[in-house]
Image 1 (cartoon, rainbow, N blue to C red):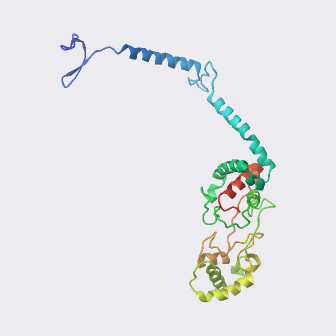
Image 2: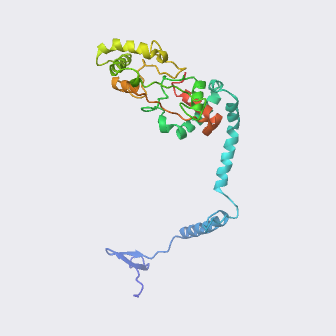
Image 3: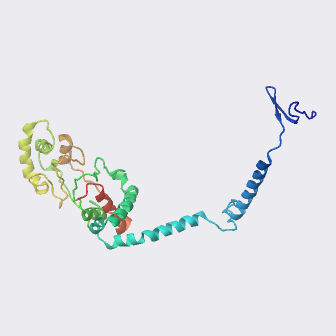
Length: 287
């Protein structure tokens, strides 16, 4: 190694590093910086002694304090359960109509029901409960079985066409492709479409009204407003589950599709079903 080089200007030795004629001085680190550095090392060693730190084959060192973040979370969850216990007990004891009439309980049920909806219902009804083709929009005022809180609870509890629940909601529209002619299906589809929109051929509406009167009023009513006791939809409001227009209506008349909703009582329990019913009722379309 060569001899130590002293900087001519400062009189301080250099490290031997040089860039573009600029030499690096070998100044000692500031004392405060060195002390701080040693303190951080001591702090780190002390931390690993006091708290869980060193990983082992199947666990980690527990630390002399025996601290556990899992235990903290468990305690916080337990405290939260205790805090909401009185609300849960009240929801269990009251009907959904009574819950919706109580501002505090309704607010709690809507929050809890909204969380349950995101876990269990968005797959069909969408994250905003807006529905999609074949899955009803829960924000509007169109309800096959009624939009009161207790009616929604009944639907959530027992489902729709859910074979394993004896109290499930049932409605079966016949396949009119086996009952009336193709011309009659075209006519009645034009009549039904004409109740809420323009049709392609107005001459089909009058004979379609006759076909409707002979085959459809038993469920949908003389005014085509539907029948909630039977789950028969209102055909005059321009809200369609499987698509609007004469072609879509004709397809449903010819070979109707029947959706299925699970009965949620067995999976979620009475309290969570009530919270879901209150949440759905709060979306804006509840009656």
